[in-house]
Image 1: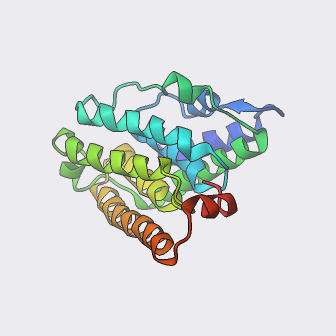
Image 2 (image 1 turned 90 degrees about the vertical axis):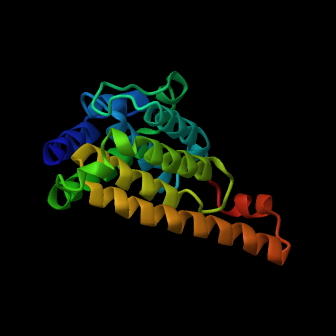
Length: 206
C-alpha cells in the first residue's frame, strides 16, 4: 500500500501546475484519506523551512486530535478543515512536500508492518489524541526551530495508524518526549540569557 502511494505522490509532484497549489490538491493526491494520511500530510510541510505554515497547519492537526478523542473510525473517509484545505503553497514547495511524503511512504513500506496493534486500535485513541494535541500546540507556538521534532512525531504516529504498526507509535512517543525537552530547553535558554523569543523568531521563522 505505502509503496503504491509513494509512486502516486511522485507522479502527482511531477504533474503540479506552475502556480500556487492548494493543500486540498495534495490531499487528493493521496486518494481516499483517513486520519493517519492526513496527519502525515499536515505534518510534512512543518518539517520543511516554509515560514508561517506551522501556525495554520497546527490547528488542522489539532482537529485530527479531536476526531481521535471522539474515537471516530480511523479508516473512515476524512477531509481537511476548510481553512486548512485552502492554504496555497508555491508549486516548488508543494512538489517538495509531495516528494518528501513519497520518500517517507517508501521508507515506511520497507520498515513498517502490522504489529502491536493494541497501540493503534480504538482503545488507544484517547492516548494518541492527547499526544497529537500536545504536538500540534508545540507546532503552533512560536518556538524557534520548534516545528521539526513535533512534526516528525506526528509523521511517525500517522505511519503507525496507516500501517497498524504499534512500534511506529512507540517511536512517535519517544520523539514526543524529545520534542517537549527541546521546546523546554529553548524557552529555558531564552529566559536564562534574557533573550526575547520574538528576537529569535525574526532570525528563525516558524
